[in-house]
Length: 239
Image (cartoon, rainbow, N blue to C red; front, side, top):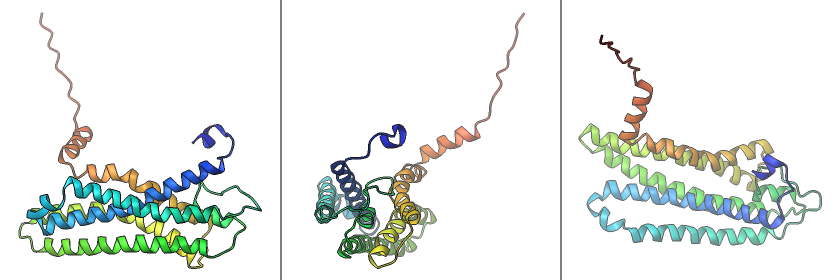
């Protein structure tokens, strides 16, 4: 933001690495948390009576801690690899933040292992998480179809649609951007930048909107704002 607003000096190398670590770390943690959310919905629908015993504060914190540990282990390899890169032509990144794949492409190091690491991580964590999510949702849909009341079915499908919308906004652009370069498919700078920015920024932007519209009080409040009729008070002049 400082660079964009005041045209200050370039980002130092150390700060660039810190930024890259935080962005990639949080993306991996978010991917794992989406998986935990799908498992949470699976237990709530399939085993509703056992939900309070299975999903406790301790299990939630354990899931968050495990997600950070898995991501931290993967990011350790990234940080080792990025310090091996040499920049003999330019050290200016054609991107809005310090991105690992962009640094590899700008560097003079042409070893394929650097982009292969990105594709391997994205495939393992991304495809693995999506597989668990779709498996959980498949079971939930199958269970929802057995519900006799239309109201019960509506509640289940409402949860699935809102969650899937955010999941697809996150996974599809990021997996496409991260997996293809490691497979030898070259993406244009504009295409890569657009997909990563959408996958990084769009889900957090849509989360409050998507999940808020499931709240009846918020929906009723929005309806009142847009459907409110102006009333002109009558003024009675008494002589």
